[in-house]
Length: 167
Image 1 (cartoon, helix red, strand yellow):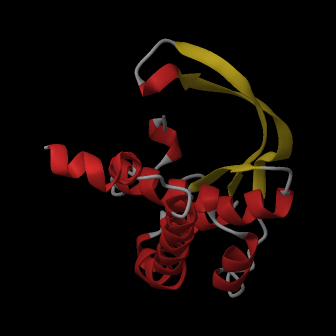
Image 2 (spheres, helix red, strand yellow):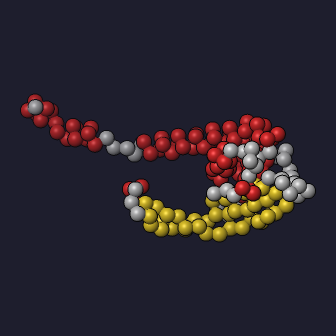
Image 3 (tube, one colour):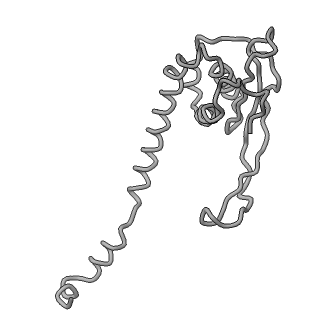
């Protein structure tokens, strides 16, 4: 996914993929709060642009792929320090049309590649993001559980007391 020119050799690719997955789903409010102190002027490698992306699905999760539909995605790429050619490149893809959100996610990606800022941002940005996303997932799970039907219970209730004696 990432080419050698996209990341610092000292940054494990799995770590970068994990934080980029968090940044792609990060709400604008959390990005703004965490990056308020990091107002840097980026050198744009790719200005924020919005386009469509085809989403594929699989029947049952294991079947053949099929085109499910299109989603709107905004992407950008930037370099924070234009004086150094080896400065980290921040890349972001976010759902929707919010150019500012894509820019903040790319800035966060570039800053997280800097070892001097990584630990601070892990505490001020990534930890609250993980907590927020886990909270949202728990809420979705709770809403889904309210619609759950226990068919064994329904079958037992439908059988009635006279059927239990027959067993």
